[in-house]
Length: 460
Ligand SMILES: Nc1nc2c(ncn2[C@@H]2O[C@H](COP(=O)(O)OP(=O)(O)OP(=O)(O)O)[C@@H](O)[C@H]2O)c(=O)[nH]1
Image 1 (cartoon, rainbow, N blue to C red):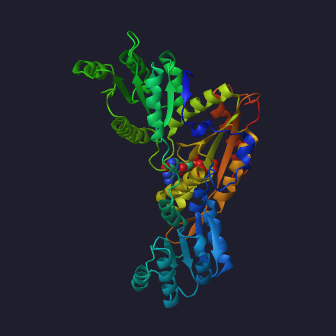
Image 2: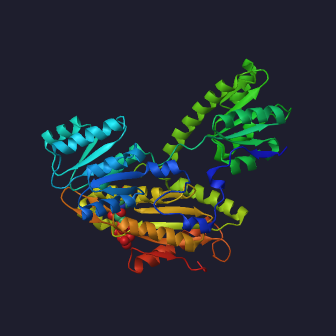
Image 3: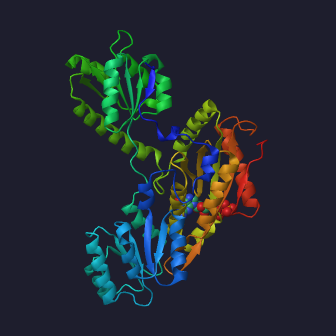
């Protein structure tokens, strides 16, 4: 039996090449799941082709695919194949007439009221909104359309990220028993790595990045208690939940386990279902704490410290695999002027829009963080600088057409990008080099006129 067996391949380990990276259709994250594709489809009923095109373009920036229909009658024709995708109704001129209302009510009934209907209104009169609510319209947006508010709403209907499977490391020295635990966790949908050689524990911890360790080791001198003590001595794993399994969960054994830093000790006789529940609760709590520690409050992206940690991790991975790794530093252009002109809250809105776009457009394996202030950083594993430049340039072009709304006007913003690649001949030997090189390239992009992507030269 393998000493280390991965039960479920982590998303980061999926076959992934630079070619595939840039061939992936932009406007979606790395997924081959057709359900997610259809989930991000929006039907727009609009009889003005120019306005329809504009709304489609804005929504496409956030990865929504828009199918435009020029009338409610055409929408009805699509219904057999469109049971639950949101419909945005923007019938120019009419605002909301009785016929439209009747048609909406009819269509909703046909879809067993599961069809989210959103409407664009030219004004916010209470009477109009009441009519809309009465027809079962889920949300009204007042023109001019605040694209961020609409995307917020759509995102709630289709969460961007599904909850990732819990990552678990099972360490045991009895192959049959440990495999049985691993099978049970795997069957519960967890991403399980089974390690049968406890002495390889640290490499398995670094490799599989578990969110909880289950240890079933009862070897004198190298049992769960001693191994837990070793894990706790490492700063990196000081908060990692550890659950021990033992033949006899006596008070004394439990006290020893807690004293050495374990979170709990359960008897082997504990039914698998209960163990799975106990493990899940601890991982959820761990995730909440990690989110507080690692995420930036404004954008929800990795914060500076977490980004540095991820950079080290990705670099190690890239060295081991011989894959390229590219870092992109992204800085909003003339952001001081945006703050000065429209105010800090509007500046924050622009930052959130950039963060959301990066998250939307990049793959799940890419690490997106807020480096600080108006600067973001993205790590693109298994991607060379040229491929990364193509992807970032697409995102740059999508960002420059997003309209940011203030109380009385709208404006567009841009960003500049500096890229550096780690790997053979790039001149970058470590994470610090990579950040410096990307920063130099960003400086060139700024001085070359902004709103552009520059790649670091090899001698960075
Ligand atoms: N709204 C908002 N502004 C921020 C935040 N963090 C930093 N800033 C502002 O970002 C601005 C950055 O300005 P500069 O460093 O002069 O750069 P710039 O105006 O973007 O100019 P270039 O980078 O040369 O294009 C400063 O005015 C900061 O106050 C934030 O969290 N929210």
